[in-house]
Image 1 (cartoon, rainbow, N blue to C red):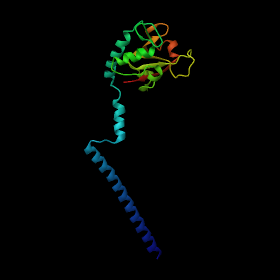
Image 2 (cartoon, rainbow, N blue to C red):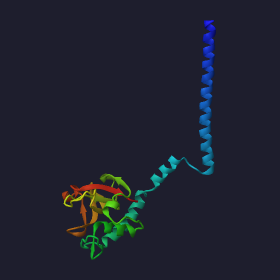
Image 3 (cartoon, rainbow, N blue to C red):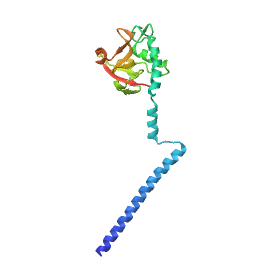
Image 4 (cartoon, helix red, strand yellow):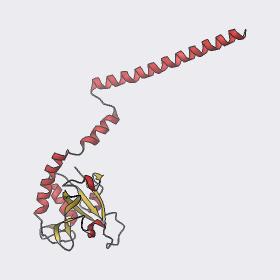
Length: 194
């Protein structure tokens, strides 16, 4: 009788196991079938599509540099222009206007203020900086709680030093670098917009 009970339990166990394995196979088959149907219709898994969008959002290095040349060409037209808070001309311009106008002439719309500009794009390390990237600073002499209060456009990276074009309050529109402690001490981040 005990042997019959063990055989019965084993048979039930095998039966339940068979049902579970069959269910898993049917479930997997259903997923694969739905995937094939989506592929026939030209639809991708939502995650895959988002991943592709993220990868394609930014230009490759060659295209990035080509766009940077347009941006920097416009910025250099303001070379020597005096700094003027709220200004947007060669008679006087501020840092965020220089960035906004330079990008606009390359077909890229950016917000007007450095704070809003600092929220556009993705953050990259100083080592990854490319011409055309935006570089942000937070000068402590300005008593406010803003995360940034100055912006420039990266012009080149040479010997591990980042150079940038910006509208300086004291020098007007000029090129500076992170090798200068005045800027390296207040550096916040580099952002890639395109």
